[in-house]
Structure formats: structure tokens, C-alpha cells
Amino acid sequence: MSSKYSDDLIDKVREANEIISVVSDYVQLKKVGNRFVGLCPFHTERTPSFSVSPDRQLFYCFGCHVGGNVFTFIMKMEGLTFPEAVRRLGQRAGIDVSTDAESPQERAARERRESIYRVNGLALAYYRQILMRAPYAQRARDYLKRRRIESDTQEKFKLGYAPASWDSLLSVLAKKGIQPALAYEAGLASRASGTTRYYDRFRNRLVFPIVNVYDRIVGFGGRALDDSMPKYLNSPESAVFSKRSNLYGINLASDSIRRSGKAVLVEGYMDVISAHQAGQTNVVATLGTALTTEQARVVLRYANQVVLCYDADTAGLDATVRGVNTTTALGLDVRVAVLPEGHDPDSFIGEHGGKAFQTSVDEAVVFTRYQLDRIVAETDWSDLDSRLRAVEKVVGVLAEVDSEIERAEYVRQLSGKLNVDSGALAMDIQKARMSARRTAERPGLGQGLRSVAHAIPSAPNEALEDPVWSSKAYLEVERALIRLATVSSQHRARIVEVIGHDGFKMPAHERLFCLLLDAGGDESVAPAELVDCVDAELKDYASSVMFGAKPWEAQDDALENALEAWQQFSIKHRLNEIDDEIKEADVSGDYERVRELQVEQKQLRRSLGSNVALY
Image 1 (tube, helix red, strand yellow):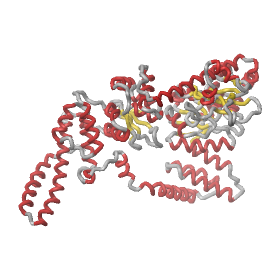
Image 2 (tube, rainbow, N blue to C red):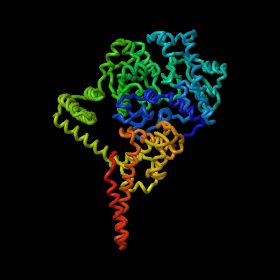
Image 3 (tube, helix red, strand yellow):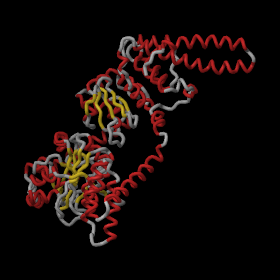
Image 4 (cartoon, rainbow, N blue to C red):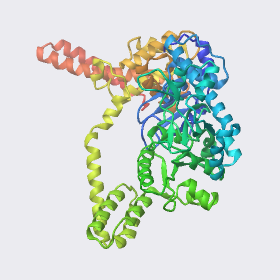
């Protein structure tokens, strides 16, 4: 850990940010025993393997082997350095964190981001004021009136208007001391090719501010009110804005999404605004892109169900498929709300009302049903080739369904519509599943062994080739000794007394134990504090060690039992050595040495009678 922050300040920030509370801002957690589990935000999975321990103030994923404390989590989730994570969590807890630990580069980057946020805020105030008061914004006000967007809704979404002028915003910003180059960097200005002349990016457009989950303005979208193209224009990528990572309306919808357990995903700004005005406040939109993995992860912070409600045209249907492929890969429960042809959510709400839209969302079908219905609707039943193509598509869809009962029911329903034998259809589906399984399994041979190796930082050590030292049972004893060493300096001294400084055969365990010895003092070392002290290579593995505590470790004699188990393994190791030495002495004719080794062997085997079975 590289930081100029004092240990006391780091401890204060850590203690003020309970890890369950912090992680819950990003991941849905469910209490299981004395831990909380959820879907890992760092890799794709459908079955939860991500675990958070409130007792140890650590998280660990048993799937991708990523782990750490509250600082590590924020660093990985937000792409922050350690000093930035301390500042972020300090602000969250209301702790005054000095910026002295920043490097010049970090300070410059932070100040640049803050400058862009400030410019965005000034631009929002200007656009908003123009929409409400300027006579030449009447066209925009009339547009909103035709779209039946009420004044309260306009205020809620902070809608604005960018005048048709080439430099009205730049002129206002200049009076505030903002240079055109900074407005350009914020995405509010464009630059003429090959020159240093800047002009307003948004002109004669209704402006929609894009606000992130932290309620900060990261960018803008603009709808043209004339024939300008494109019809919708978004801010470009900047130091604070990535269209792949943001969702329009998430700042207003997050609480509703969390309460309802579902997020409704639409395509356009007006779809979101109309839905919220109609009372459907868990609606958000992508920003001119197909749903991305980053956006799906944002949703996953608040709910595990997504209802896709895109336009009922070909482009909307294709977007639905792309969206499902993204969301299902992350373990989200994906459903599709089907609107009448020719409608998008905004037009549907305008014609049929908010309750009808709510009904469409409530009646959303699972994606499999949606796909099958779409295949049937597109099939020409009078054409044999069309029917055969439909059967091929149905087989591909149903091969992805894991439930045998569900597959059987779909086969029963569709065999009649497709005019095919149900048994033949079921057989083709089974063949497709077997083929997919063989393809999936082929690169995964030996994955079980590799998963164990992946969790342990690599380091050359001949001891790990030994059948005793490399056994899983022995490694668990070493891991237990590391955990018990965090209890007190007395525990650490006792471990040194019994096994010595070089008693740990696993290099990672030896490094962890040395860190604990360096801690000094009589106090215990909190698991989260230990994880703070290790380097990046060891952080994930250290978290897995701290997470592996067994019930017996809470007993008063846990340390002595663990040390006795270590001694038993040491004896087994020596017995293996003796076997080899006896063979060598016998071959060389040194029978006196053979007798000495046999006596030692007998004594060691007798001592194994009190073997302590911990694992």
C-alpha cells in the first residue's frame, strides 16, 4: 500500500465505512449465516459466489478469487487509486481527508474532473434559465407542451434549451472565467477542423442533462428542434462521462428500482420522462448505444430483474436481443414488455396512459417466450423452407433452456404450430444441448485443479512439490495459523516458538506471517488491516485466507491444535524422507544406518497416534 496518509486516518476512514453498507451500494446482498452473498460485480456469473463478511470487514469471490477490504472494493469498482479511494470513502463518511497524499498527477486529474463538473453545472443553469425565460425558447416550450411534459417534470429532469447561436454558451462561460478549451474538454464546445476556433456544441436543441448515480452532471443530450442531424446528440466521452457506463435517469430511478426489485430499460430520453411523469419511476434509458455490460452492472446494484421495453420496430427488436445477451450473462432475470407495433413507450403512454404501460411491464414475458413468439410471428406457414428455418431457430432457443419440464412444455406447444413430430423436435434439441456441452467442456479440462492454483500467488518453492507440504489438508493448517496469528502477539510468538520463522512452506503464507510479525505490539491485527498492508499480488489471496476461518478456530485451544496438526504433518514429511534414506542405506550396505532410521521411524509412527484431525 503506497500512501502518505497516516495509519490513524486510514483506520478512521475504514471504521467509518462499514463494508456491508458500501458494497450494498453496488451489489444486491442476501444474508446467509453470518455472511452476505450476491452476484460478483467483477466477473460474469449466474450463481452467487461473492461473499462479504461483516465480522472481518472483507469481501471475497470464490469464483474469480478477487478479494479485499472496503478500500480494495471501491478501487476495483470505480477504478481508483488507493489515495482516491480513501478520499471517496472519507467524503462518504463526512471525514475531512487531506489531499497531501496525492501525487501531482493525481491532483491534476482530480482538479480537472472537478473543473468539468463545475462547467457542466454552469451550463445546466444557463440552459435551464433560457428554457424558462428566453422569448426565443418558445419553440422548445411549445414542443414540450405538445409532448404533454408538465412543468414539474421539466424541473425534475432539469430540462433546458440551447439557443441557435454559435457561441452563446461560450460567452456566458467566458464571463465566469472558463476558457473555451475547458468547455471543449467537457464536451460542451466543438472546434473547427484545423483551427483553434471553438463554437457551442449544442445549438437550437432541447437539452437533457445526464446525471450519474452520485447526482453529478456528467454530460448532456440534445434533441434538434429543426432539421439538423443527428436528431439526438450526446456529449462526447470525457474525463467524467462514458456513455457505456451511464444510464439516463438513474439518479431519479435508483430508489424506485431498489424498492420494486426491477429496472425498466427503454431507449430514449422522452420514454424515461413520460414514464416517470405517468408514475412508472423505475425506468432508465441507454445513451444511444445497445445495452452494455457496464450499464447492466449499474442496474445490478439495485435489482436483479430487468424489463426491456424497446420500440416495437425491427431496430427495437434487435436491440432487445442484444440487451438480453448482455443482461443474462450477468445473471439478471430478464423479461420483455411487448408493445403494440408502431409504438415506443412514450407514444404508448400518450395514447393509452400510464396504467396501460404499467400493465405491459407487469405482464412482461421471459425472454425465451418472447423469442419463440417472435419466431412464430415471422414464419410463413405456407412455405416449407420458412417452417424448417423456424424449427431450426426454435431448436437453438430451447437448447439454452436448462429446465427439462420447461423445455417439454415448449415442445408440446410448438410442435403443433410447426407441424412437426414432438419427439423429433425434442431429440434435435437434446442433440444441440449435447453439442454445446461438449464445446463448453473441451477447454475446461482440469479446471478444478487450476482454480486452486489460481487462488495462490505463484512463487518458486521446491517444498510445494512435496506430497505432504502440497496437500490441501496441510495448506489449510498453514492458512489457519495465519488467521490465528492475527489474534495477538502472543499467538505469533508461540507460532515462532513451535515451527520457527521458516516453518511456513507456502511463500504467500510466509510473507503474510512476516507482515504480522512486523506489526509488533500486543494488539490483534484486524483482517481488513492486514489486507491493507499487502501488495497487489497478494491482496486477493490474503482475503481468501481471512475468509476461510473454520468453527474450531474460535475455541480456546485452537492455536495449540493447529500447531499440533502442523507437527503431525512435519512427522509425515520426515517419514517419507526416512523411507528414501533407508532404501539408499540398504543399497550402499550401511546396515547400521538402516537400523538407526528404523528406530526413528518406529518412534515417529507411534507419535502419530494422537493425530489431531482438523480437516
